[in-house]
Amino acid sequence: MRLKDIIVDMKTMYGIQILYSKAHQALHYALSLTYRTHEKSFQLLPSFGYVLEQQNPSTTTDLQCDEDGKFLYFFMLLGASLRGFQRCMGPVIVVDDTYLKGRFRGTMFVATAQNGNE
Image (cartoon, rainbow, N blue to C red):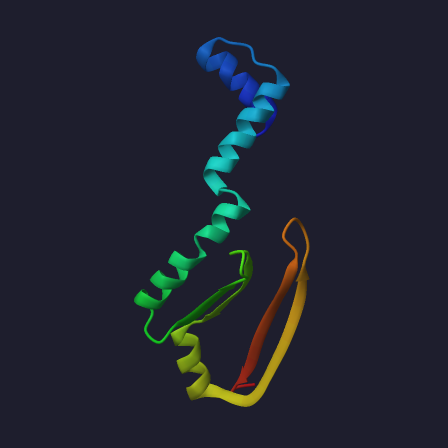
């Protein structure tokens, strides 16, 4: 939703005129309620890992934090991926990484393999 749309909707629905800055604040607040903050997302990781392990047999997760409780890394191995790898994948595993940019910097590692059909 664009800021102009918010201003027009407020005028149409409630008969009030709001400033551009107020529409911007309202949109920012609505987005924070919808998508949460990065900090809240990191706080949900332990419960996400627990539920993932409970609902997916042989899934493994590992969350590591430093001594201050600050996030270091999160490892996730889905049980279905492990079983598929053990049954169908060739002996070649390729590991790659990419650097994360933005407020929370880090590195994301990805491991892939080739199946029997190349």
